Structure formats: C-alpha cells, structure tokens
Length: 503
Image (cartoon, rainbow, N blue to C red; front, top):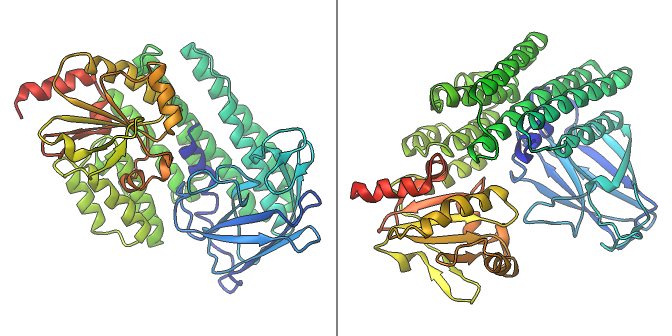
C-alpha cells in the first residue's frame, strides 16, 4: 500500500467523530517517562490541529520536550479540536521538513486527555543524543515500544497497536508472477483485517461505544483502501509491461472490490455515508473502472456530492484540494482550478491548489538555475527557442529509472531536435554514480538540487506530489504537456506528433 493511502487511513481516524461534550476543555497533556533516555535527549512533539487526510505538511506546531533530570518529559497541548493528531520524535531524526522516523507517528489526541507514555527500546539499550542502540541498529519507528496509561491512554494504546498492524501490509511478499502478487497482498489484507477485529474485540470493554465503532470502521475502510491500492499497483505493473494486462481479470477484481464496498456500506450505512475515506475509495474504484471501460472520469464524477457530505468548511476545502490535485495529475485543467479556487477559503488548501497553476498548459514555467556535476549552472532561459523536456526524478524511484530507460533514452537516441534536462533531487555523489552506471543517457543534461534534495526552494515551489514528473515546454518556455499526459503512451510518439503538427 502506498505511503499516501496508508497515511490517508491512519491519519483520518477521528474525522467523523464529534466531541461528546462542547464544554470539555480543549487542552491535553502528554507525559513521557523512560529510564533509557538522559538529559541530552530532547524530544519533539509534532501537533497537527487540523490534520485531515494525509496532509502531514499541513500547518503544525513543534513542542520541544526537555527532560527534567529524572527521566520525565511533559508537554501541554492547547487549542485542540476533533482533528488533532500528534507524533513523537527525537530532535535529530529529520528527513526533509518532517521527520520520517521516530517513536510513534500521527496518533489522534482528544481534548481532556492526560496520557503517560512509558518508552522502551525493543532491541538493545539506547545510547543518548542520537548515538543509536548498543547493538548498532539505527533508531527508527519500529524499534520503540510504548505503553500508554492515564485518561485517554487505553484508546491511544489501541490506536498505536493498530497502526503497527496496518504498516505490516508494506512488507507483504511481492513475487513477480502477477496473479500470485495480487493474491498474496489481497489475502494478507484479509488476514490483517481479522487480526485488527480480534484486537478491537478484546479491548471493547475498555472503550466507549464511539471509540469502538470508530476503530472498527477504520479497520474495514483500511481494508477497502488497501485493496484499491493493490489494484492500482496491478495497473501500474501492466503499464510498465512488467506484467501483461488482462482486462477480464482486472475487471473481475474491480467487481469483487465493488462488492466489498457495497457490503461495507450496508454495515456502516449512516457513518460511512459521511466518511470521506469511503468517498475516496469509491472515487478511486470509479476511476480505475472508468479507465478500463470508458477513459478517465471527469471532474463532475470526482466531486459528486462531496461538499454536501461535510459540515465543516475546512474539511470540504482540504478534501476538494486532494481530489482536484489527484484529477490534475491526469488532466491539467486551468479552468477547473480557477473554478475550484473560487470556493476555497482554507489557506493551506488554497496554496496547494494554486501551486498546480504552474503546470497549466500555456503558462510560463518558472525559471531555475541548477548545476550539473561539473558545477556548471544551467538556466531554463538558456534553452529559449528550443523544445525542452524536463524530467524530475531521483535514483530511489523505480518508476523514475524505468521512465528514463524505456522512454527518455530512446528519445535521446532518436535524433529528434529536443533538449532533455533531467533534474534529480539526489546528491551530487549519487547523480555522478548514476551517470557512471549509465542510468542516464550521455546525451541528456543531468542537473541536481545542490545536495538539498526535496528541500531545495525550486522543488518546494513546484510542489510535485509524485515522481517521475516530466514537463514539455515550447520555445517560449511555456507548458505544453505535463505528468501523465507524457506517460500514457510512448514518449517518443508524443514528441514526434507534436513536432509534425508544426505547432
């Protein structure tokens, strides 16, 4: 299951559950206790007060937790609401802007909670101040074990245990044969769902009805979203020719998936009808069915009744932003963006939608100045008057390397008059090795983001959500085609067709 969809499930657990009492105070307290840390270790508590869906880059606060000298850390969280989530990290564990590993990640917190967390390393004894474990293992999420107690502790501990189960799907076996690949993940999802159900049943007596219903519903929706992702992987494998696309088998899986969704709706009719995760699952199913039967679904399908499902304006804005960006990745539509932005008021959602305006055909693409491995700077304006293909990528992205090998390399060797610039978020050292290993054709221009990775201001400005991301520019530096428009058929055929059109 992809990171985005897994997070979509894990971070949305309390969206449709309102607070039981408006009069309840909107603050909470977390206390961390551990004999395995010392005063040199500073913890960071990330607090998202309006975390909706998978938007972990949404506005958040960072509370620095310093030990009192007796193994105890405390933090008070104020101005909370029904969408508050917290993550706990060591201060040095950062990758890009948001830490990628830590003690626990994005658990829901409620006003009035007063939770104590006992912290233990699972393997070895932890060495202070970022030195890792005494057995040499790195400090990462699954190496920590937490025990939650106090007001709200039982609920948070169950969320914590369930999160651990959900992440196991990432490690499902992935044999190359397509049918075995699909079935192995499919049945692992079913087995993990049963495991979650058993966990909830055992804890039911310790939870109120709202929490039990929420967790059980989360488990069912997680299963549906996971299976949708399996179908998505299958389709991607087919597009990459690593497996042969069997339309009948694919539609059979879609039908089975639809049956699961229908059954889910029957079981949780009232709550599911107002649960955007199920709306998202249904939209994805409709999308893939439509791709196979009729072509990509339109904006009207993507946003059907979305606004009417949610009372909170911030929820409407965030969800619509997610859906329009998902749609935009397949079909950049400037008019659609303008129409959607008219009704968006949440600053974060508006910013995300506005960023996509960069990629609208006809708009001038932002200037850049980036180096190649020799240190020479290349500006976009240097290539004025030429047809230019930009490709944003990185070495750890397998689809990126596939795209370079099977699409960019043939184009580079075709003799077609076009400038090809590959912009990597890798370090100079990694890019240099990629050139030596012939991952990159010698005739293209390979640039990198000055060892700043995804934190480079230019990458941040573009807001690219998925790689590889190709962009075709005309001689004036204006956008012609982007993203999937350049990946839905052979790239060389697209470029030839454009050249032959004389535009």
